[in-house]
Length: 113
Length: 111
Image (cartoon, rainbow over the protein chains, first blue to last red):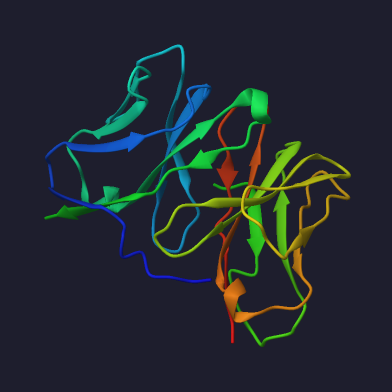
C-alpha cells in the first residue's frame, strides 16, 4: 500500500557546498554497487557505479567510496547545485544471484540557495 | 533519453478492475525487472525476467503477474485491483552486468 516517506533521512546542504550521502549494505557477497538519483515523479537515474575490486571511483562532480571492511558506501557530490535536489538510493548487486539489484533506503538531498 | 517506456504514467481505477501496466524497451536487453515503490521509500523487486518465456517472482510478494513473450515487452497485470495495490511501479532493463535503466514509472491509485 501507499505510505508517506516520513522516515526518509534528509540532508540539507547549501548551494556550492559538498554533499556526502552514506549507505550501509548487508551482503558481503555483493560485487557491484550503484548510486541512483530519483527526482519527483521520475524513475531512478544512474549516477555512478563501482565494482567490489575498487575502493574509489570518480565521475563528473561525483565520487563513490567503497569500504568493504565495514560494508559502507558513500556518494560525494562536489559543489552541490539546485539540480542535485532529489532522493538518492544506493543499490547492491550479486552477479551469482542473478543480477538482481537490492536497494537501500533513500536519502533526500535538499539544496538551499 | 530513456529507451525504456512505461504506460500509462498515471492511472486511477476502481476496485476490482483488471489492469495491465505496459513496459517496453528498445535496447534489446534480455533482463527486465518490475519494482514497486511507495513515495519516498525504497524499491522492492516484485518480478523479473531473464529473457523470452522466463519470469520469476521477486523478493516482495505481489498479487500481480507478468509475461515475456517478446524481448522488448514486459507487461504487468493485476487481475483485480485493490486499494492496497496503490503504489508506483517501476520497470527496468539491464544488459549483462551493467546498471539498470529505469522507466519513468506508473503511479497507480486504486479507489
